[in-house]
Length: 201
Image (cartoon, rainbow, N blue to C red):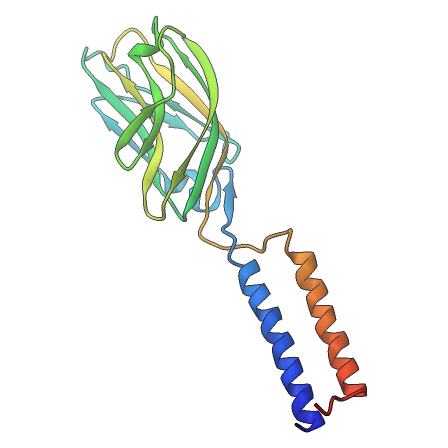
């Protein structure tokens, strides 16, 4: 093997390692922080079924507030604020709930995942709060919802904050970046060394 061939082979090996590390680094999924980007309020849909609920997005991207129905019908209704997952990963948020009714059982709040409602509020308490996280897959429908069992005697309302959800764009993993930079410098040093002291193996 000539010095030139040995040098090229060594550099090709080092470059391959560097490219491999870079591709691994860039595969960590992004997380949207707050109601912004893929999860801006405009990318959600407000849905009412026998309800006159509403959403207040004036606090976005930090928070949004969802209020359930109270149309006087005396029958079941639902208000939802739903979107589509932009990636695979974890959704998490804080929630703070209150109701004008006598009991949260009449106006339960929770999250929706692919058409299924998961209640977060407990009965008997008119004010309560909590934190929740759950997994979603790309393309799944999810969001927030408030039922009203009777549409009378007052509404339930929840403020959602500290919202995080998987985004579509991968980002570099911070913990790997220093090593990647070091690897790049190592490649440069190796190239200089090989150029000055070529191998004849």
